[in-house]
Each structure stands twice: as C-alpha cells, then as structure tokens.
Amino acid sequence: GHSKSVTLIGLGPMGQAMARVLLDRGYAVTLWNRTPGKVEELVRQGAVRAETVGGALDANELTILSLTDYGAMYTIFEPASEQLAGKTIVNLSSDTPANARKAAEWLADRGARLVTGGVQVPPSGIGQSGSYTYYSGPREAFEVYKETLEVLTGTDYRGEDPGLSMVYYQIQMDMFWTSMLSYLHALALADANGISAEQLLPYASATLSSLPGFIAFYTPRLDEGLHPGDVDRLAMGVASVQHVVHTAEDAGIDAALPAAVLQIFRRGMDQGYAGNSFTSLIETFKAAKV
Ligand code: NDP
Image (cartoon, rainbow, N blue to C red; front, top):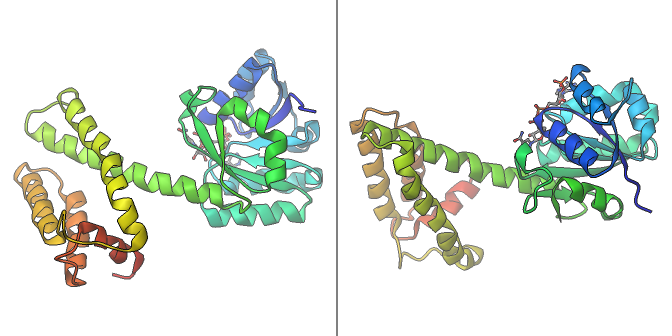
C-alpha cells in the first residue's frame, strides 16, 4: 500500500518548500539537516526531527535528498552506511550525469537503490500544478513512490539509467543560462539606449516566444543532418552578429557575449559552411576541439 510517510534530508529553499507541501498533504515527515536550526520551524508545523542521519534513514523506507550536489550525499551518508540497506533514496539534488551514476553504484554497494530527479521549477513551484521533475533509475522503485513524488511536482520518468534525469536537466540548464544571459545582455544594450526593462518586456517576450517555431522548423533537417542555405545562410548570420557586436561596442557595454557567438560563427565559416544554414554550427559544436 501507499505509505504517507517519508524522510527528507536537506532544508535549503527547495527542501523547505518540499517539507511544507508534504506536511500540508498529511504526510508524516522526518527531517534531518546539517544546520539543525532549519528543522525547528517545520517541527512546529508537525514534522519530526531525527537526531542522527541513521535515525532519519531508519524512520522510513523512502528518503528524499535535496542537497547542493551529490558530494553532500556522501558526507551525510558515510557515517550512517549500515542504515542504508534496503532503503530507496530519491536524490533531487542536481549534478552531472556521471556523478549520478557513481552515486547509484555507491548506494548499490550498501544495499540501497537510487532514483535520481532533476527538478524543473523553483521552490515556489513545489506543490503547484504544471511543475515537473525528470526522474530516472529503477522503474519499479520509481513506480512504488510515484504517488509521494507527485505531491512535490509532476513526474517525467526518462528511463533506467540513473544519469538520464541529469542529462535532461543539464540540457535544459544549458539552454536556460545561455538564454537568460542573452536577455540580460540585450537589456544592457536597451538600457544604454534609454530603454527600461519594463519597456523591453513585450519585445523580449516576443523574441523568446518565436523560438519554438524556429526549433520546430529546423528539427527534421537537424535529425537528417541537412543544413541547406535556402532560408538562411551562415555568411548572412556572420554579418548580422557582427552588427550586434558593433552596436554593443558603440553603446559602450561589454560585448563579450555576442563576440563569443561571432567567434563560433567564424569557426563555421572556416569549416566551409558559409553557404549553408547557421544550423551547420551543430557540426562545429559536435567537433569539440577549437
Ligand atoms: P541549497 O544549496 O540551498 O541546499 C543546500 C542544502 O544542502 C542544505 O540543506 C545544506 O545544509 C545542504 N548541504 C550542502 N552541502 C552540504 C554538506 N557538505 N553536508 C551536509 N549538508 C550539505 O540548494 P536549494 O535548496 O536551492 O536546492 C537544492 C537542490 O535543488 C540543488 O541541487 C539545486 O540545484 C536543485 N534545484 C534548485 C532550484 C532552486 O531554484 N533553488 C531549482 C531546481 C533545482 P545546510 O542547511 O546545513 O547548509
């Protein structure tokens, strides 16, 4: 049957949001955190404090981790290794796919199984509809605890390889940080021209909202490895990015971000893609070495 009882270790902003939502939904929640003070407010709301990590593990079959990275997991679990046998650990900390796979092996050596999760929302999205988390690891373990995990966010199970949730997570982060920095750089350019963030908002939103259409258009071509220059040519893209770099320089703002983009376009030119679409830069990226 479904047990409404869970251990949660890690009370950063994310772990605290998770604890509150679980308590709100009537779960018995046992907590441990390195800095004990963070447990107190949640104990007033009905959570149970575990005095030791071993005690936290003993309290439930399922322990959810919300830590800065996978390194913190070893620091916390090493002194309580004997308590791990037979347990299911759901680690909702983000890290590299390789570190998630290593953690699965480390836990398996101690008789525990690992389900990994990459949360796709900020703490305010925990318990909200429409939010979701990528999961991977043993499907059977995921299915057993799916109902509990869905108290936190929707679930998107990606497969048995424990690294997969982090593969998807890092792919999203790759896009997120680059896109958000492109927005901040555009805002600096706007600001240098007397345009405020509020004034930029509809224009920035329109540009970012147009991207799914571009991605959908290029997807079949990318999967076939075709980069015809029928719609856009890399040589045109180089000229366009050059204009952005010069506009930024003329405005007296830092041009390092568009300059890095220009450098990548120029590498594509050197590789002979001038007459092809800018999507031929996927070959530049895949080739790795500069
Ligand atoms: P924090 O870095 O604030 O969480 C820190 C938690 O990890 C605290 O409980 C902290 O303990 C503990 N911790 C860190 N290092 C150690 C250690 N060496 N030994 C013991 N405990 C340790 O992160 P968040 O709460 O913001 O996020 C948690 C995870 O969720 C992260 O992996 C993050 O990438 C991911 N995430 C976060 C999002 C966000 O918007 N915040 C969004 C999506 C994913 P102490 O309290 O003692 O410092």
